[in-house]
Image (cartoon, rainbow, N blue to C red):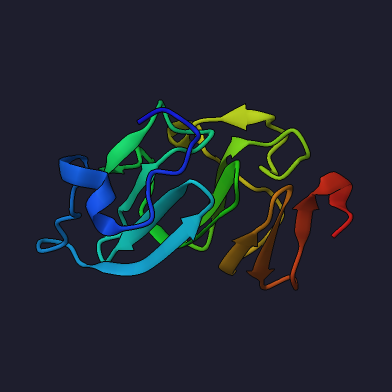
Length: 150
């Protein structure tokens, strides 16, 4: 744990440190895996992640609820940032955003400080890459980040 080497090629290589996600009370409706971390969204709109990400505090072996101030409808994550759509169609992004991919003039923020991306109107979905983010919105498909060249 904490290293950058491979952790094995067989499920038994993880040993007792690998914890199963308990989804009995609030089932997962979507799952994503990006580089060194994985996440899922529950039917109730909570977002859980485990692994290692730039916006985590260390390594998470078991799924932990991401401390968002809103319920998630749709979400997409890249290597260093995530963007989510809430029930009202508002996009909020968090993580590292030196290329403008957070969309709210922030270079970095944690999940609890995720700010709404202005000027999008109602958003249906969001997708992110390494240094950009895009939304499927009532105003088209706006993108931001990577100097807005996407």
